[in-house]
Image 1: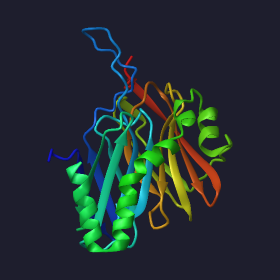
Image 2: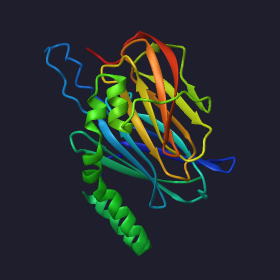
Image 3: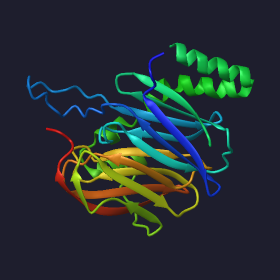
Image 4: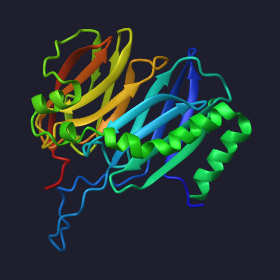
Length: 105
Length: 156
């Protein structure tokens, strides 16, 4: 299995669980040109990110091209316990996708 | 492919319910992609983007939204943005940069047990207002902050 493009950390702080995630992705806008050839680099960006806590949707993000390269996202959920499973998955405009699982600590 | 099957199998081992949920999660990208609001994301103006997303371009300013972004961003390709909402029933948080070629940056839909909080990093083409649009209890609110950009981050 190829190395996952997703890093995910979930930690309980003051009773709430903060989920932090870093995704490796070029996030090409389709506006940039290749400096050598002058050709436009085709757009390649994540359109949808979904996060589940124990199999239940907690966050569903729709993204455009203006999220930074190697996107970072963090949010806070209530009612998570140590050892719970957090699953994060993404799909980009070319149909590529990935998902990763993390445990709450 | 392998990995997805493994996730699915793991789910079905744990319990039928989880399997259904995980299965739905894996199968959903196609359906959800259909829901990706192309009009809103490709809109060239803030109003069009707002209309595409919320069917309204009116979003009264609210003090309950705290938009945390730098005053000056040296590098427009990576502008950290933090949004904290002190409201009940936050359904979604969207980020818009007024002067970007396509102003709508992202829209985060949050479940009921999720805090009104999002932290991420965005690209900005030039100096512009960053607008946080929050949908809570069926109503739309906003907050804005100007971010000065010294080097644009949208290429071109």
